Figure (spheres, rainbow, N blue to C red):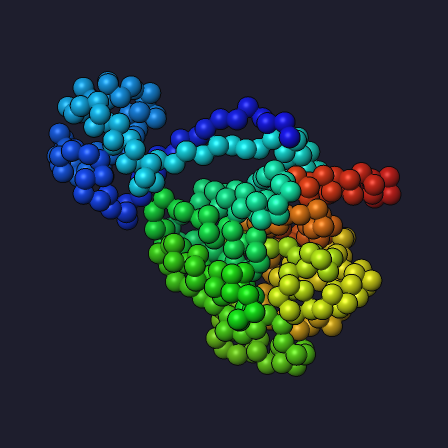
Length: 356
């Protein structure tokens, strides 16, 4: 992997709801020279050092403390996450893929992270990138929707807003129950809301039910109907994109499908799913019974949401993600290099026939 000019970005985060423990900044007076609380003084020192480029000695003279105290204060800034140092790990391959796919797929924003031999490491990077994207778009009064999946689990884990925004969270589809709490949509919605200052609206129903009649009965329940109305009106939706390959299928891992059933969906043209609904590579929803057993927001509703961010990685998801783009279900994407390469290969193969 060829590294693009790797650099560090310094973020000064004024996190109003945290508290600096007494003594964290050495012997700095509680009020500081200017009478500000200790946290305000730490923020000031961080800005002088990282934004204005002053040396520790210059800062010491300006605020009237010793140079060693300035060093301790800067360390306290890192420990308390007032300052975070992030390294842009996007490779030259990732930059090229981003540029070409952004042009061909008309997605914005589009972020591509490196692919690692360990899929969990890839998902870790994926989650961090999607979390930074989400943090950048937050403002009070927004409503945020989330589906389910292991990639979104990593997004929620990495999510660290600079303050408690007044943002409501809405679950977009039914839950997994005890099958897999780490990627269950209900659990993810609660955890995400716990990092914000809004209300959490969940769907008290399973993701997959026995038949269409049961689904219709659940969708008619007032509480579920109300939550789905809120889901259709979110400002930002975070959605996972699943694969129909049995070895990569989250529905197989969660026990909702057997490997044989997943392979059967493939034979009927399914390449993956979004909000649990099976779709083909052209973006059409498949006429399969499973789609009539899903409790959640219908994918067509995604087309009216201002920002729908697809979050998925792994070469076996390339066709599913391409289908989600072609169907108009997502307008932003965070994925990895393996998916980017796979999508470009399929676009080039189809180009003589489809004019893409």
